[in-house]
Image (cartoon, rainbow, N blue to C red):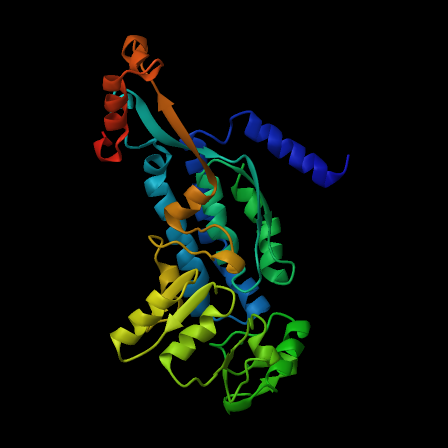
Length: 349
């Protein structure tokens, strides 16, 4: 049998056995993930430095701390997240029990990108494990150092040139980004060192919207500036394109920030700040439309990897009372049913 097929078969069998469903099993796996982060900190720091040139401080704030926070939150909240969620009933179902039960999907696949190779691998993994799934984890093959540590070490825990600036992930992406530096005019930065795969933080001005730098995700330290005549034109510029994963508005006027927020749609939004929202597990991270599907972080990861099963349990012995629901319908019974179904009569017990 093909090794991959055999792995998938064993994972499906493990899930089918019910092994991953108990809270104790999920918590044990999450605790193992926490130990992996603690025990292999230096190994992972070295891998992140090798892949992206990240300093220890940058790796902490953009990778380690966020991953550990997710593990800690899931461990604290697991029993609460797993509880059935009561929902409102109406008069016809007043004696029923209506709730949403969070069920694991089963076997899930997580394919991670290279730009935050630890964070964007382990944060969704936390949610998938907490939700009770078996997981096939596919780290990015481009960030080879981090991929090696995750592939070789993580399974044991489950059943510099500027020294503060990262490097480009590969020669291919360095060449791609170097080509984008020819768009518009360099106002700040623009220096590069191919031997170090280094490109300085760069601001481009006089950029036209038809140029390559405006046609693709950059994934590099390049910021193109397009000049517009008014805020309305800026909002129209945004809305003519696919909805972005993130949108940021910077202004001394809160009215301007709010106008951008209200006049656009994006996966995430930041006013007068960058991606600081990623540090808040209370907020979801995800795209909308073309920029992505689903959302994760904290309980949102748990919900994303859970089937939200609608459930209603009626007590026995209600059939006499249920008679009003069946034809023939008299004038009184019709009025009573219409009144009972009125949404204003719904309650949550």
